[in-house]
Amino acid sequence: MIFSQADKITAALFGNMREQANAARKEDAFKRLEYYRDGQLPYLMDDLNARFAKPEKLKPLFVNMVKKIVKIKATSYLEPPKRELMDAEGRDRDILAEILEGSALNSKMKMTSRLVKLLKTVMVRPVWRNGRLDLDVLTPDLLDVETGNCPEDVKSVMVTHYVPEKKEVWYERVTPSTMKTLDYRGRVLSEQRNPYGVIPFIPMWDEPPVDQFFIESGDDLIVAQDALNVLLTSLVYTNEMQGYAVGYVKSDNPESEIVVGPGVMAELEKDGEIGFVSPNAPIGEVRKSVEFVLKQTAIANGLSASSLSTDPTKETGISRVVGNRELMEQRADEIELFRVYERRLFDVMRLVWNHHNPSRKLSTKARLKVDFADLKESSSLTEQIAAWESLLSMGVISEVDIIMERNPDLKTREEAAEFLGKVQAERGQLVGVPDEETKPYVA
Image 1: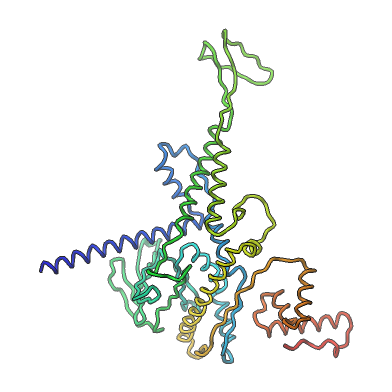
Image 2: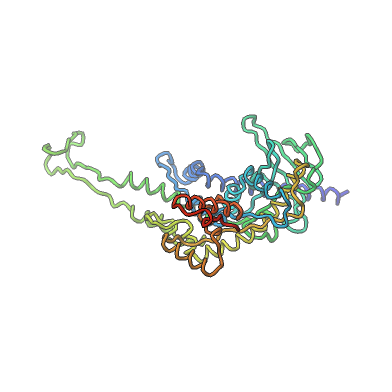
């Protein structure tokens, strides 16, 4: 009996510790999201209230460094990748095009890659909603995940749903066999069979997980943002309180009011004096501290010190990445991860689509091939034409490749070939070339 009671106490203590750890993890994830979404003011005010006796005298100021760095580091989807089905059947490609358009996959994955850099762990869920396949991007502040022997062995996922207008919270717990709805106390409200046979959530990590599902890293960026906000607020205070000269009067009659200005003369007592004092405000030192924090944070995140510079530059986002070896290495690692994530996501999307479209199923043999864009620095039109002519003469590209590069909206080579044929036919009509000399291009 004693051992049984001890086991219960130990289990309760362990449960409380786990709940506290989960609460801290979710609070941290929510804070990072708020920092990214320009919601830093409440956190800054809390910091000022804790630091200063009269924080109301301070004018808060923040600049969103978190968003800037996250967008620079998330480089896989700077340009939309090309997706192609291998071993596909007749209508598979049409269905894939319909799914990609309906789910806004390009924009959702671009947002996901940024959130992965910010939060380190994100889950994407294909859902059937309003007659089409959609994608939900779920962040750690909404998730509880049960795993098996390794972080990638997901046994169940629980999603927290907030209903602000009703001030309600409910939960959804999904396993390979069931989908349950629970109230805020954990009581089951409804339960149904999982029609897909798998957990329809795809975890995406910033790096392969080692010992736990949710990767805990990236605090340095948030801490640096907090320090920057305090420095910027101090800079405003220093400018306001010490940036202006202060007038003074030395007189035996302290109650007298003296008006000063051009053409005005003032009568003073013996040995009286009027003057202004310019305080030696440490504005320059505070500005140097701000610049130091910005540069060191950029370097610590694999960026150049000029990445967060306020100096104007003509450098584009792609040029900034191409010119940084560390960023290019990070991009290569990120692409390898997201290539796997996209294939896993496609497999689950196919399950969801086929369940809700029994008469228009995607082939189970079809495999997704994802080709991420190769980044290169921008060049002049003359240089680009010379490069194309050289590649054409070598026989490593065709006119179709040039058309697809110039017009990314053409998703397939067949569409590009058809477009090229129309262009050649129009040119023939405009310059009066006989039809037999302007045959449409055939891929």
